[in-house]
Length: 117
Image (cartoon, rainbow, N blue to C red; front, top):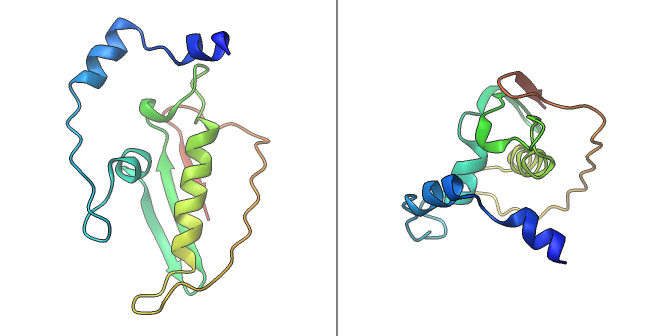
């Protein structure tokens, strides 16, 4: 447990950066949350068809792990958000069950454009 706490500790530079962030309260249904904006900012929707969404995304430094790869948590977030958008229809209640599986077989590097569909 101590090792985990140590890994989660911010260094002075990161602590100062985080302290300067302005995070406004999220109003559900009215505006995007900090979480979604942080994870999805920069994503480009290339094609939309019923049940299909294709996007490209250039990996930014804020979403990389210590090796410069797109962090696995960021991948899961993007897959969840883009996958959810494929089943969303304006004005229709979302009453579906979605089963998503993610295999982390390759890496997405910092600054490289990647395709999500």
